[in-house]
Image 1 (tube, rainbow, N blue to C red):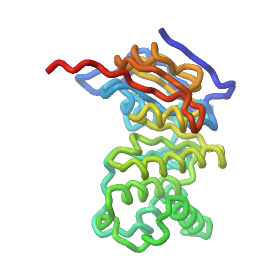
Image 2 (image 1 turned 90 degrees about the vertical axis):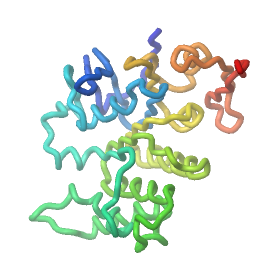
Image 3 (image 1 turned 180 degrees about the vertical axis):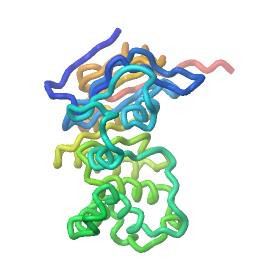
Length: 272
């Protein structure tokens, strides 16, 4: 059962007939995927279904064994590393900051792809770092050492670094992991606003289906390395889909705050 609801939008990033995975562990075969331009897309699915591996393949951290990825009208493998870094920002899982680096210094590293021996640090770099610190609420921590911050604050510093890169596409691999609920919502509100106000394309691997439905305009639902459904949450999310993708019996109602789908799991009798 593959359901699709297309945004009538040219895809910014697409993969055709992709097979990818790790040497002894194939993850997906003959997979087709489209990331609509100017939309916040969330990739959802159970653990181990291939969500993060798909994201890693789409940003060239992993080379597909087969198939082609096209980004902004050009085959992904034709981009130089620096050219790609000016167009595509990635927030990877469990990134580690160099010891003793300050918040401002780490965020400034997001400007590296824009530097060259001809063009040093300029006013636009300064403005991009200032704006990224402001958006993530980190101005007061700019001079603090990253390793002295809480997990949630550190995650916001990495987000700020990606924002400072000022790329038209941002890929986020489980950006809300390790954050408490209020910081999760804060970050998702930021991504949503960034998409709505600047038209930037975002793709995030998310674990919480209700958050994905609330904040993303486009969902890709995966299971066992296959895309089971893709489209707007309101069109594709229903009890049948959640049973197929997650093996979850549930009811789906309208979120009283946003009107987006809200999943209410049914209770399963516990076998003790």
